[in-house]
Image 1: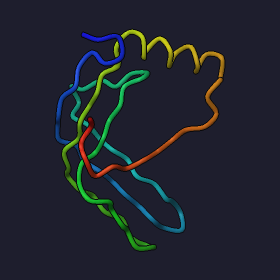
Image 2 (image 1 turned 180 degrees about the vertical axis):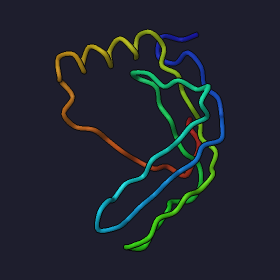
Image 3 (image 1 turned 90 degrees about the vertical axis):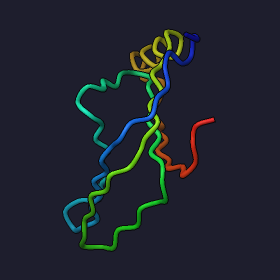
Length: 98
């Protein structure tokens, strides 16, 4: 176990995307037995999803889950406690984690 990453594994996931007048969202659902905590990372694999206005889409994909090690988890909690992080980055990468 390293200080930054405790475990890395692949799993199935379900993506729900909606682009309508009421909502613009993309949600990723992992299997129930996978608990995600502070500092953990989830990368969904596959081509980017394009949903035309007024529609929604549900897809099954594969995702790589990276469970945070003690150092990354502590840093994430520290920055959240002091609200030092006001910028949240959301990205979609069709490749795999390095």
